[in-house]
Image (cartoon, rainbow, N blue to C red):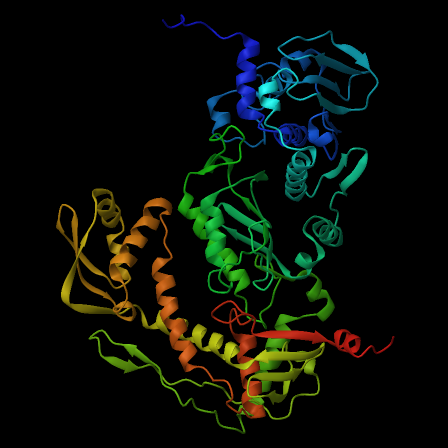
Length: 610
C-alpha cells in the first residue's frame, strides 16, 4: 500500500536539490565563483583543502550582502537577479535561480560572511546543515563576501562515497577555475590548495598583460601559434584566439567557448569551429581555441540545465553560421594578407612582433615587383588543363591558368618584403630551400602547389556556378515522413546546388539530376546525410565536403610532382603564389607545406656562440 502524498520537509527538499546542483566539490566552486563575479568583484581568492572535501573557501571584494538579507540569501528560490518572467527571458548574470546556497548549505557546515560599503562591520551567518542556522554575528572583515564550506556531504554519507580521491577532485576544481580565469580577464584570481598557491593571475590592463595571462593559462606555445581574432556581425560579436592549424591536439582539451561570458558546452557551436578547420586540419586532430561570443541576452536561453552549462539560441543556425564563417576566414588568411585591421583578424601573437609584419606594405611591394618583372618576361604556361563537366555531362576544359607564374631570377635587395623569401635551390626534387629575413625556409614543393591549385579550383568552381548533370535513369530515394518535411523546407536550396528533385509518393523522392562533379558519388548517402544535418542544425557542409574532396583529388593529380626539376623562376613563382593563397600553410590533407628555421636555430645546430 502506498504512502499518502505529503509535502517534503524543507531540509529534505534542499538535499534533493543539492543532488542536481552539487555533483562534486567543483560544482560548489562554480556556484560561488558565479556569485562573486555577479557581485562585481575584481579580485577573487579560492582556498581548497583535500580536494574540496575538507574546505572550500572563496573570498571576493564585490558589493557584499546587507545583514538583513543574509538569511534570505541561503533560502530556496531567493535571488536579487530576476524579479519577473521578462527578466528570466534576458538573464545577464551568471547565476539567477536562487537555489545554490540553500542546496549547498544543506549538505555541509556552511558559513557566509559579508560586508557592504556602508556597513560598519561584517556580518556572519553559520549553519550545520538541514536548515539549522545560528545567530547573525558581527565579525571583522573587508567589503565583499567570504563563503566557506567545510566537511562537504558530512550528513549525506551516500553522496560522499561517490567522491574520488582528493587529487582527482582538485583536478576538476583546477580546470574549472582555469576556465573562469579565461572567461574574465578583467578579474584577478588566486587559487590555493593545501596551503600552496597553484594559480595566480592579475587583471589584464593592456595587450602585453593579456598575452602574459593567456600564456599562464594556455601555455606559451599556444600564444606563439595562435591568431587574435575579432569579428562583428548584426547583433553578434566574436573575439578571442584561435590556434594555427599546425598547433593541433589529439584531444579537445584546449577548446574554450564562452557565450556572453558564460562557460558553455554546446555541440552545435563546437561543431561549427570544427567545420571551420575542416579544410586545413590533419585527420584525427583537434583545434585549440579560446573564443568569446557576444549577442543580445534575449536571444540566448540559459535556463535549460541545472548547472547552466548548456544554452539554447533563438536562432541556432545563425550563431552556427557566423561562428563557422568567422573562424574559417581567420585561419584561411593568405600569408601576405594584412592582419589585425579593424574588426577582422590579428596576427600570430609573438611571431608578429618578432617579424615586424606589415601586410599592406608587403602586398604593395609584391604587386609593384611583379609588374616590373612581367614587363620583360612572359608567363610560364601550364602543361595541364583541368577538365570540368559541362551541363550536358561532357567534359569541357577550364580556362587555362598558370601552374607557376613567372618571377624574377634576381630577388630585390630587401628580402624582408616577402614572407617566404626567395629560392636558393631545390633539394632532391622534393624541397625548395629559400632565404628570408629570419633565416631558412623549407617548402614541400608538391604539398604547397597542391594547396595553390586546390584553392584556385574552388574559386573557379564558385565563379562558374553549380552545374547539373541529368541522370540517364532517375534515382528514387525512400525517405521517412520527417525527412520529406525537411526536404520540402529546403527544396529551393537543393535546386540551387544542382539537384533536380520531386516527390514521387508519400515516402519517396525522385532525383532527376545531380551536381555534375558528384554524379559518380554515392548520392543516396549524400542526400541522407544532408537531410540529417539540416534537421538538427539547419545547416549542412556535406555537399561542400564532398565537392572539396573531388577538387582536392583533382588538385593532387594536377600539381607538380616530386623529382620534377624547377628553375629558380618557377620556385620563386610558387613562393609568391603561396603567399597570396588562402590556407597555404597546410596541404589539402592538413600537413604543413613549409617550415621556418631562424638564424638562432641554425646557430644552435652548430653550437655557434657557445
